[in-house]
Image 1: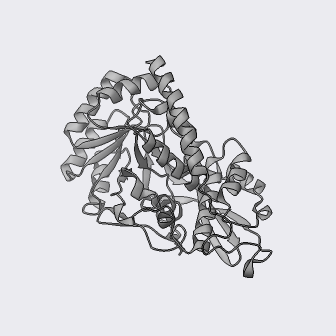
Image 2: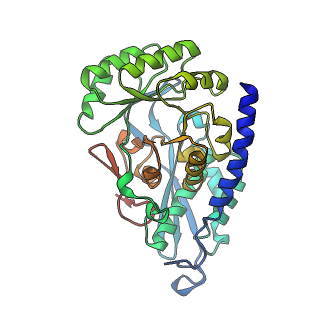
Image 3: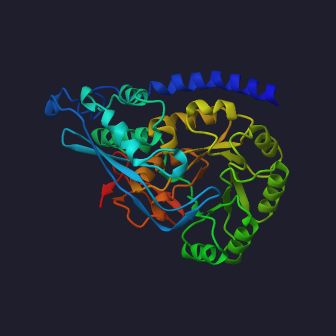
Length: 385
């Protein structure tokens, strides 16, 4: 298995280089259609100005996964102003990212966008932002999202259109039900009855079967499950996956620890449903080494530094014959709408983070009869409430 994995990783690396080279050229050229350069017209001598503030997200229900529970998620809201326009972005930091409001704000203080005269030079600007530290993915995502929002407004188009995607092809989004008691699981499931076409259920503790049986008392909707590395034995994990499949489960995320890739490959080879990487994949460079280990990957803006890299990850995954899922953290409609711009290009979407909070501050992407509906507004398509 190890030799096979090394071969696939080496072969994938060649594909990765080709894909990155092809996509890196996608910058929006200075002076392109609708461009408002900082050196031309009304924008003469204009410079970008970055501002930010902490904003804690309040969950409607306590959220429990295999490794922790929480009632709130720390976040930071970001704005980039240029020539009378404003782009919105955000960072969201659940515990496992190892980032905080303090670390995000510290990173954002280092970002000097005023050195760039043209917001449409996305590759140059975001390469500079990425170079400021080896980590800080959520902070980088916040800048990336706000810059894409600003650039889309300058161009007068939403990003799905700039990327050439058909908004009619957006998938149904899952709605997430965290690990809980049967009564709470039943209540959460009933709350969304008739609103969604697929559910996502957190598993990985000792009550997995109880969770699924409780949901099946209420609905027969397809289910995606996320073990969040919670299963410890590959044989038991595979047995559970077959049991889940018989009860309408259509995919499984991260069944075992990121350190157990050989075991995960063994499961993937035998499982009756696709197995997706979540914690095992962060950024573009991780993908080639997962070919043959997982069926697909879960891309999250807060992990991969934002829309620019997420777009590259979709293209590389497709080139390697892997399936793609778009996921999220607990986020406002700002980051969810940013991710939704890519959703027509993926197989699964888990973009419900804004629906899990009670204090959203944006109007953006909607869920209509379970399907993501992207607003036809420039940029990422959001309006502040």
